[in-house]
Length: 159
Ligand SMILES: [Zn+2]
Image 1 (cartoon, rainbow, N blue to C red):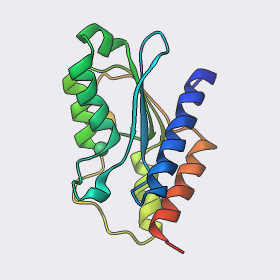
Image 2: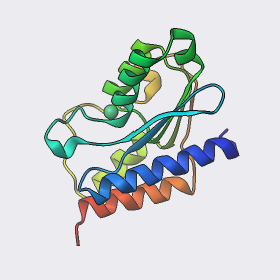
Image 3: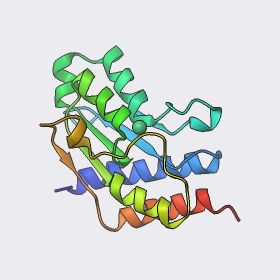
């Protein structure tokens, strides 16, 4: 399960998600960490621009493909505030990245959005393992997941 180091990176993901919310985007944030613990790259959602593929996990997968060897990618970990969607899981799998640790699951997100009356997304919600079998995936993380839920509630119920 997630240890103290994992939790530190996951808290950063939640911070990045909050930063996305502050600039009017959906609250998702992700961090790419090398095998030695070095934070290599981080990003948050950027779909408010109109390009609905600008998810942080997709950006990190492409960054990894451009900047890391296959061995480095396989040994790296991607931390993220919300479980990868099928598009991002596929990108992660195609570039051969390693472990994923997420704060909240896609199943949790789907139920939170349904509670808020948000229409279902055009892409099906699937667990990462349905897209990339064999990957080491950990989450959700109780405590932090409630913080992510609150960010989504703020995004979908503007005051
Ligand atoms: Zn995605």
